[in-house]
Image (cartoon, rainbow, N blue to C red; front, side, top):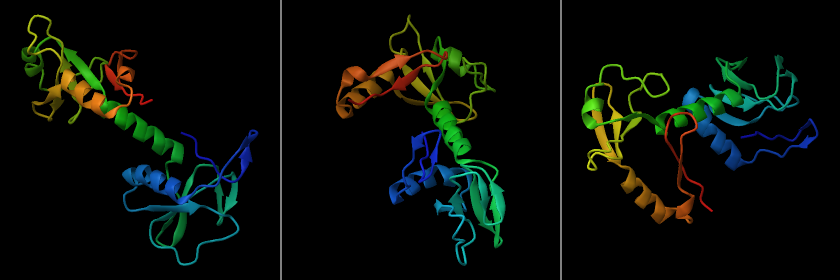
Length: 199
């Protein structure tokens, strides 16, 4: 996702950020900084009068803004009445969100059976050699027991909670997605991911 501003860089025309865009970015922003609110772009010529604690502004170009040396995509925030640059840029926040969604919605491991999964409850490791965290999903691929095949479980931190069966998910998606044939599986990273491309 690119964030466009009224400036131009590298020959790309940028567009002004509207209220809907600010609201969308605030969703991501408030995940990292729940007490702060992104208000708008930081206009170096107009310093906000009496900002509230946590009022934040997205920097759209490198230079000086409100007494700070800034670079594009940094976020300036009013903390204790002083303008401060937050430690994460908007790109960092978007990447964090993407990684969080990817990690939590990916099927982190394929187990050969429910018994194998149940035996792996203390610090389970995903197929990518990273720890499976509370709330993350795994799937059963038991070719000798069709009743177990495709069952999805969520890690509770101490055990496994049944979520659904892959076939159930696909049936529900097909009632929502305009082109059911666009529902596919990808195993490019060793994790099965559900990719939905509504047409």
